[in-house]
Image (cartoon, rainbow, N blue to C red; front, side, top):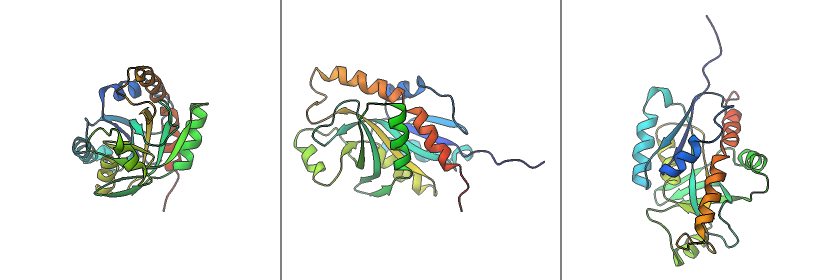
Length: 213
């Protein structure tokens, strides 16, 4: 018997247990196709290993991949709880363009009214960025930094052609460094934001299910 092909799956990758908890406790209804939330572990090497392994499974070999979690904002005026939608991810090994950035921005604004959404390059690091490193990275054109998104997306496209994107929630910013006690409140704000992003991710994924040549 004939029928519609099974929808392509969605792999959402994050690094930390707290990020995984936020995503797992968010609204998981409304997805088109199977969704896997993968905790990769912290750092680019862990992300590369975990994503490559996950996408080697037959059930996920055609999956769209979205990297998410927390990040450090680089630009003045960023605040904890702001969102970053990457136009591309980059690290010393290469640059990966993201798909559907405008749609993600639109859906995040709808899902989280009042939250600021920034767009631009998201750069990777193998360590937590502090002090002058922020301004050095900002000078390259990047607007935010994290340790896993670039490795996640690079690993994803190396395993096969697929749509990829990265969305991060600012938990640490130039005027709100994580080392300050006051950023505990910022961390709670970022957690709540991350709990609310899944409907936007599902809409992004849904848009990818349109026939492609």
